[in-house]
Length: 402
Image (tube, rainbow, N blue to C red):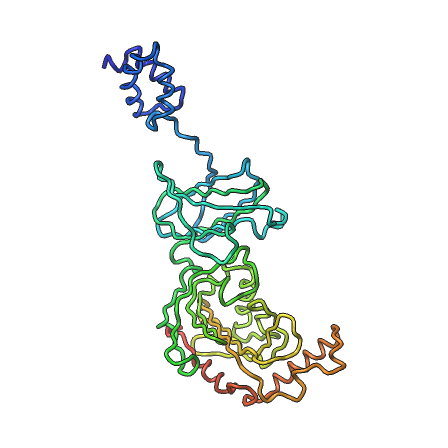
């Protein structure tokens, strides 16, 4: 007891308090102080060195991370100019949750995110002694603009954002539970009945993981901007099933398409045009045969479309497109497959000399002519035969009962 209250140790307490390290580890410094005094008059100079050199006696750096509160399934948006090159944020998460970060894109008030600006994100598990940096999964976007991975432990995590040169930036932080509709399709391959002949023999639906693009960049695409889904892909054919809520949360493009499908698949609803006007970096130039389909467990639409980037002239192959929503409004199913207009009216694939002078009037006239030809053509005018393809699609079913 006398050792604890000696004047020497009171000095150790005082000096340690001045350096911001007043806890149980101070006893290490107290034990060293008598030895220090043998080599130095007062010992305070060496004590200062000890306080800086020993982790047990050193003051921990002040945590300057900005706390953020994350609700699972929601996105927190941060817009700020960092006080220095790097910014830090801290949040709590539960093991098994997925963190998704997006930096610098889709920010109308932040100015252009140009090549002269370098952004970098790091995520650490802050366990207090040995913070471990977590790697990101491979993603589609530009390196440094995205980060996503499953968090391995429950606790506090730190996000470090580095911006050079220092400028205003935009950070979106999303925390998702394991069964978030973007991560979990909510259905297994056995839950979808696919009629024989619709896909190549032996084909099965396989899980495709959530593939976000920064800022929801680009139009709907079979390889990106989609929530987790069950799909089959081959040359010319794509069949996919996913949760409607996951599609809505994937990006703004899909939100519009999902809303259109929801509205037009209500009982008695009609559609004046196909619900998907852009897809896979292309635009719907021509379309026809838009028909409402109803199965035992879904309602949807089928049409034949010509999706192109620039060319206004009709050209094979065209796309047979089917899109439907389950009767419980939980799932969406898509089918895109090539179909050829093999018995088309003469000259439909080429602009006439008069039509070749492209302006808004002649372009609209040509599109109306093509659309009318597609709509009035018999099922046998297409290959594969349209009636046979329609029959197979009508037999698609969700195995749950609604």
